[in-house]
Image 1 (cartoon, rainbow, N blue to C red):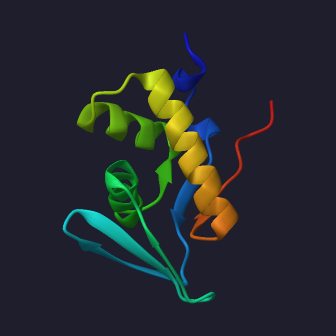
Image 2: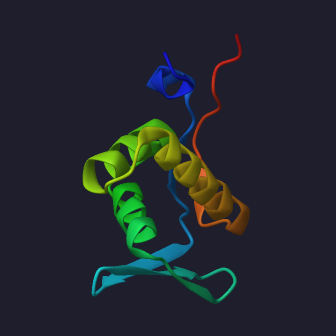
Length: 104
């Protein structure tokens, strides 16, 4: 089995940060970081992932599954892209991590 098959309980979940406001305009998410007065415009896939995050906390695996179901992309590529996307959003402070994976 691949690493992507790990249990959801072992994965951190992410949610939109409380100081972030967003709007979907013509299929693109505009994300405002009110704490820094910065606006980000996300591409089509990023906007779709943002919509998923706006529905509630999501694990990376649930986001990967959403991407593979919606777009023509294989799981390994989707996992890499989602990992980079969530890492960038975390670094920019646009999302927060709710819980840490359990230590074995």
